[in-house]
Image 1: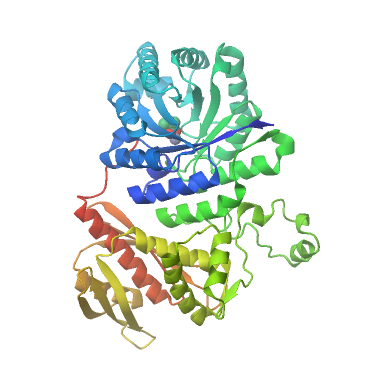
Image 2: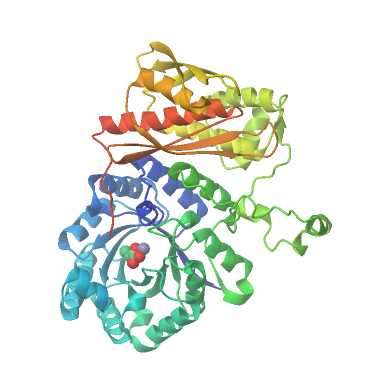
Length: 515
Ligand code: KIV
Ligand code: ZN
């Protein structure tokens, strides 16, 4: 079977989602998981857009060795040079250049003539080619581009050395049959098209990005670009997990395959949601909390008798964690190690000892510890490990009720080991906790989002709190989990505050990258 290459742009287009800003360690962690997932290409960023992006691309290129590592570049000599500087140490580097191709964007935005744009595109591909054999070219807004001009541009950039041409539905304008027809026409009218891989990059403004990407595969596209959980500019890009599982489930129809290890899908989705703070909607295909939940009694009965009656995918094939009891209060370290390894976490002895302590505390509170609980525990460990702890939460105590003034007392330890205790009242218990913490930390900020999700079902479920705080127009995500949601709220706030304090030490967040 033919293969379709999966090009992940979570770290570039995904990071362009309003409200997402990732640090280099966070990007590296996502890139390592994308590697485990088996994506063919990781677009690690847009090197010329900011020093932060440059550094992240460089780091990923140095450390993630199996997949192709790409950097985006506008058709400016300096962008192409910077892209190369950032990826030159990659085992398999790729420069991805793009320029607008529709009359609308050429005239209204670039304010150039189409002939000038063509020359710039050719010169940029040649420049990229002088550095690197693997060059991708994207005509931006290709679905609103005059077809004759698109043919000319594609032929010219392939002659100049482009090895992949990426037909971008930048504004999510096209529809499946129309897009497939456009690709068919490109194959018919661009004489050297067989010298390049035909790729697609679809946005989701009309909710068509996955359908358009799949229609393109039937019309000969052999690379699909997208983001985990459908992240991306505006309404996002094609959700890669959906594209992958559609191809996997309907191989009979598509007659193609991917190199993806689908069992890594759930974990990748969780990690991206965790790090970006963007939740996955419960009814989201493939990775939503309800994706494999049957509410109807008739369906439940049938699934117990024969799973495939109402399930077209085996939940295990996407790495869905079982909610069955896996470990309990009496489980030992070895049992924890084995279960964590099965879930894809390989810990050094010291890390395991530490995780075991936390597991014991959880098992004491919950008695039954499921895979989902273990994943939450590991996420929470990662979140604290990622951010230098300027302050650490030692203790929180809250009183609240219908006739009480909500009051919280907190104790924090700072990096030098000293502890501080303070208390505050508030409009509610969370407000009281945050005000008490503010009295110690003393950094003004605005809480713009607060959300509680439950990791598993049941009264003893772990609560997962996600918050967003803002200071000087920068946003910081914080997450915390605990069986007590007040403790989870306090942990989430400390996580966000530590990010804010660490970023202040670094001189603030990198600029917003956007092509
Ligand atoms: O949407 C788009 O056109 C892009 C290009 C840079 C490929 O993201
Ligand atoms: Zn895009």
